[in-house]
Image 1 (cartoon, rainbow, N blue to C red):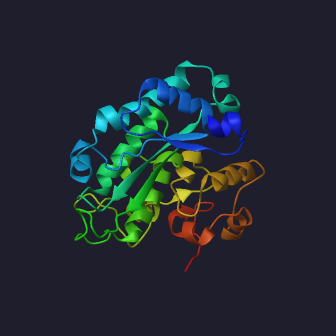
Image 2: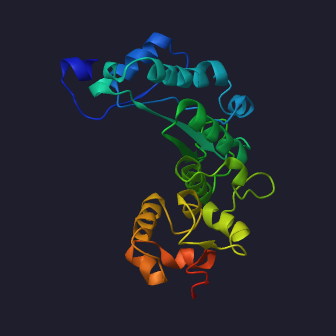
Image 3: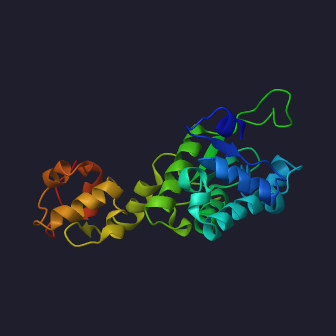
Length: 255
């Protein structure tokens, strides 16, 4: 309130909601901020107890996120800052207490659906001297990277968590991105015809994102796509897509 009302600050403001916050405090924060967040730290009660036993997963952390969505759903947007309600994020510590990628992404998928989470953040664990976890090894930073990639597939590409290419133990492969790993398992022997498949199917193909899928659909209205060069002109990473597609019924040549 000092920033907004007294100092007249009009720029971006992200407020973190602390464990134990009350409903009216959350509501007031939403009237002042562009984004609010509640850091869950762990994907469920069991993992949070090992990570931060003083915190209560459902009552102190998940409930405020649900309050945020309740306010967005029931109160008019003009009550929020600059006439709209803030977006919501959360953060997880990765690799400190034995949680799997499956646990983390299942929670993210649930929050995407229940509270319209804008983004889940992942922080690879690194030990700090003088803390209870100082003897634990650091988390591989590639694991953090793969979790981000997978979370974007859940949020923007129509994938479900059950489709992620988990390995034994419920973790993602570190050596390749999850979309490519999924494609190798599902499209290598059943390539998609670029001139026929819909947007949801296009988004399953490596090298094609939301903008690329839109460009393909627009280009198809003016005629068929015949070559990888046609795709390159649309901004598609044609080399990544080539092993998993058909053009006019034929597999394109690729290295």
